Image 1: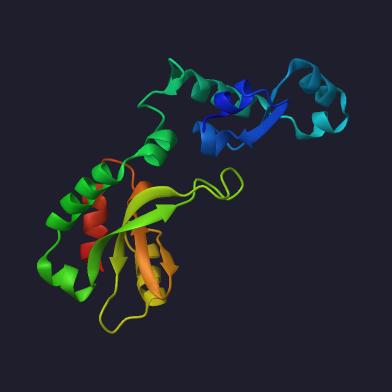
Image 2: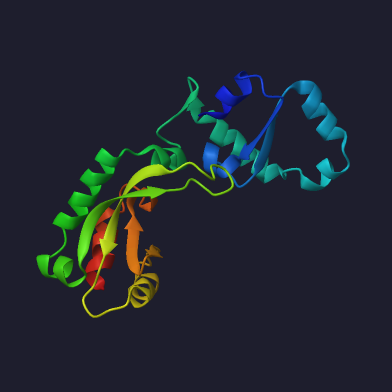
Length: 187
């Protein structure tokens, strides 16, 4: 559900994240009925927690990326969050095709369905469908594999779940497929 839909439903005030839900700078936003927002502005704490000018400039630019009430393709955060499993599968298969079969076998790489969070504060119970590389290397602990990726020439940050290492494709920026393939090959 979009913020604008929640506001239109008649809720008095809505709070949300500027970075996770708009693709803008880290900011906590409050929107809603003018009378309630004005009451909040009068509270002395409002001065202490207001955004600085740079945050407002970046926030304005992010808001401009929403044309016709939907984000443009230039909004990277929203593009990554809304990428379909189908498109992520295609990207994952492209990356796998650039890897030697021996690397895939040795690292025990498979492309699996996954679910990610936009951010635990923004959408704490909302899971987004995704795809991930699952790594089950022969003779190597997942914590060691994670360290090798983080410390590589092109650092890659994944996550460990159930003693298995994953790299989720919603976190891979389009155009970085060859870099990721190179980082995997370097391991």
